Image (tube, rainbow, N blue to C red; front, side):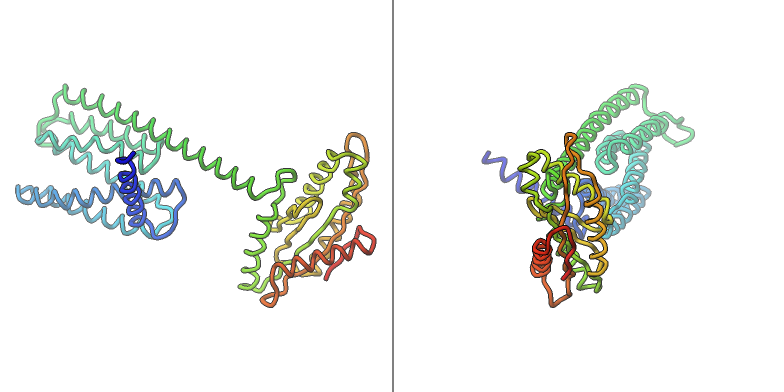
Length: 368
């Protein structure tokens, strides 16, 4: 354990360093993973081409020096471009193409100097890490077929002797084994990432929604009201809050049972979803009390919506286990009044209006 922790810190810092080079803004997990791989590949290409260009220059291999220069500039331009993009599909494809071209060139050069051919085995790691499992596999298999052609094409076409059949067979078997090992690993990684993301989404959804009704809970509606407040102050568009309460809900529970009370709550939530727009937000505030935020709606518009919902609930037959349950609701409304107002006061006004409606006999809409 003493040796593992410092290695983890160094690894974590290196990953953050790669992310910092590859993007100037936050990225989602899948994009971040691909970005790290792409940046690593581009940095390796930049360092390798820059270093080997001096080696080949000293040997008088000017054609290879020129290829090193092209590779160096291409990788550098890709790295500069990728920093400005939230999604970099084009660069990922380009990295894959550059890797195929680079490995093809090393295969050709390996006909005269066999050690250069070993670079071809880096292609599966680059392709899968940057392009994912399916596209990476397509790139790898394409290069596999191309590689066999380049290794066996006659001397008259490439001015160098082809690889021996022994080398072709052995290298092909090793390349395919390496490809499918990395493919399996990459597929497993992507399945794990999808599973983690699904669990994360499930947890976030559960933390922001009421388990019984499926509506937003108090925490979620407050976050959305704060966002809408900022938008209202920025663009001057009003929003209205509706505080509403099921009349005599305790009597429903006492007379028909708590299961019937749960049934009523779920039915009310379903009616709310049908009666408001997708941009609005109905929520369960607590117990039998609900809070609805109507986006870009003034007090008069909110009053019309609340009255429509009130009538719909009054005219709906609530039947649980063949027993009809009388259900009505009382509504209190308040519109946000701009920079002189605050959210807590706006909610308080709607709550006071609700209790005024209760005092006046229930089953009504009161706006303040």
